[in-house]
Amino acid sequence: MSGNFEIPVVLPAALHARPAGAVVRAAASFQSQIEVRVGERSASARSALRLMSLGADTGATVVVHATGGDAAAAARAVAAALLTSE
Image 1 (tube, rainbow, N blue to C red):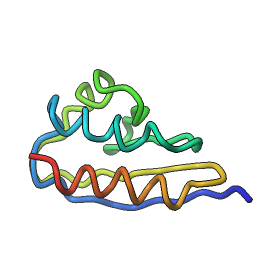
Image 2 (image 1 turned 135 degrees about the horizontal axis):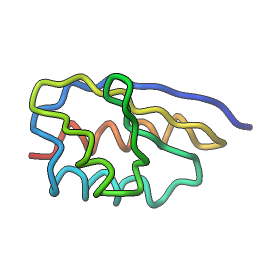
Image 3 (image 1 turned 135 degrees about the vertical axis):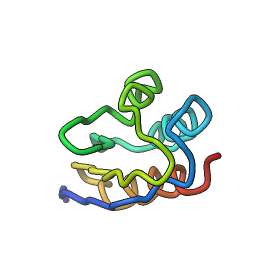
């Protein structure tokens, strides 16, 4: 069973090295394709450098988008990593 799942997240902290690393670790255990989107820009949740290049600041709304068999769980895990990172 595959699907698409999206979760908007208001960032409690800028998307710098520590939160990006937490996102990469959260995404690693899923098979789905997972992206973090900020406006027109997007980056794979499996690349800390690309995530940081989005330039998402504290208070920015990002969208976690996942496609695949475990998309819902993957998007939730990445969203949780974004919400709890400082």
